[in-house]
Structure formats: C-alpha cells, structure tokens
Image (cartoon, rainbow, N blue to C red):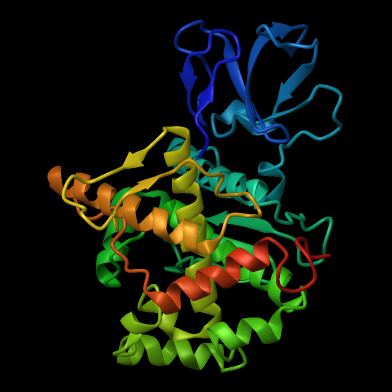
Length: 360
C-alpha cells in the first residue's frame, strides 16, 4: 500500500483516513489518480484544497454516510457509489449497529483488495457491465433456521459470511480448520482469485498454459474438496503448494497463489513507500539483504526480483513479530515450484501469457 500525505499540510496520512489530524481538512481517496485529496465544504459538495488544487469539486461515495468508505467521485458524476462500492449486491441489515461495524471491517478489506487490482491494471467489471461481473454479498447466518453462510464464488457473485469480520469467530474457524493464517483481507484476495481465473485464464486464452503449471482443473471439484476434508491434505503438499488447501484442487491452488501474490506485491509497495532496507549484520552471503527501491507494479519487474525482496522482507517481519511474542506474520515457505506459480500469475497479470493484459 502506498503511503499518502495530506495535500494541504503534507502530514503523513493513511488509506482509510477521513480527516487530517494536523490541519483538520476532510480527506478522501481518489482512485483514478491514486491520491488522497484534501477537501473543504462547498455548497453541499466538496472543493479540493491545498496548493495543487485546481478548482475541482468532489462528492463522497454514498456509503461514506455509514462510515465504511472514504472514496471520491467527481461532483458531476451520475454515480452514487465509488469504484469499490459499486460491486456490492447485498449489504448487512444496517438497523443493527453491530452489523455496521462488521460491514466497516469488510469494506476496509475489500477496498484494499480493489486498490491492488487497480494498481495492477486488472479488469473490474460489475454485474451490470458483464454477465459474470464481480459482485459481493455480505450475509449473516440465520440463527432461527440454523443455516450458516459459507464464503464462496459463483460466476462472479462472491458471498462472504459477515461472521468473518468478527475477530473472535474468525480465529475460532482458523483454529478448527488448522490454518496457520486467516484474515479478512486474505479472504477477499483468495475468493477474487477464482473470479480472475475465469476472466484471465478461462476467458483470457491462458487455459493450457495454466494447466501446465497448476494441473488439471477439470477434476471433479466437489469430490476433490470432499477428499481433502475427509483425508486431510496430501502428505507432500509442502513440496509443491503455498498452503495445504492449495493442494486440494487446481482451482484452489490458483486462488491461494493469487492471494499470496496480492499479499506480496501490496506489502512490497508498503516497504517501498517506507524506504525499507533489510541488511542483517550476520548475512555474510547477502541472502537476506534487500533494498525495496523498485516499483513492484511495473511491467519490467521480474518475479525473481519480487521473490528475492520478499524473502528478505518477510524474514525481517517474522523476526519482529517473534520479538513481540506474536506468531510469524508470514508463516509460509516459497519454494521453487511456488515461485513458478507466482511467476505465471505475474506474467498473466502483465499480459505476457494469454490475450493481453485485460480480459474482455
């Protein structure tokens, strides 16, 4: 994630900020220019403030009133929802204050996922723009009937259980499923990977190339998952997959690897924004030394540059976590087969495999 500053006073601000703590200007994120905008009230709308203001006027996304979005639209736009919120199909019952807080957490994660997709130049069609466009339903389980909501993907319609935004419930599920890592943001990154498999692989002329790397996606998906949960992960999964769940089916391998690609590029952009250099004093061979001074989203950046920088940065971050008594921030190993899979996604995203950068 990029590190932002207030255009009015140059104070460092963050992606979700709605006000500058130094100059008290309202703030909003403008996705097309990837910048934070300082704002002043102007006849029911907002005028751009700061030394670089050009007289532009803005309005907040409709969902700003609920405290779940700070993205901006042009004042003259006919749209009421921003580029992230326009993908919402179903939101929680807002009469329940607890639902509003859970939805806020959902939107914070979803907006970050959308941010990375935009930075990578990926397609983001809505369901109005494409019959299998990207749409989100945030649903609660029905306590009266005992029906539980399961996170899933169906031809672009992504359902995410609202309970995943409850930290205690999510940790309970993580422990029950034996997962080393489970976050709300990771959920979004994984499940959207299924949609991008449809858009960029199935519809993007990359099916054969993908099968050569991830295996046979025509294997019965339901039976594969049933076997995974009944028998446990395949015993050699550490040799070929980024997680045990990735070994259950080629689709899950792709989605898991996609999520990790998003994890990695977003965190490396954060490292670049903070000017991070990793140079351990005991690293005589330079294996854990890196300066994150490259644009991870640039087309010319190679997967080996990404992997080398990530090895050093993740090792440092894990060490910091251990020093504070926490679990590893990134409890995964990127072996050569996994780096090869990340490389496929890296090349497909940048149009070096299939029908170019964007799918129709």
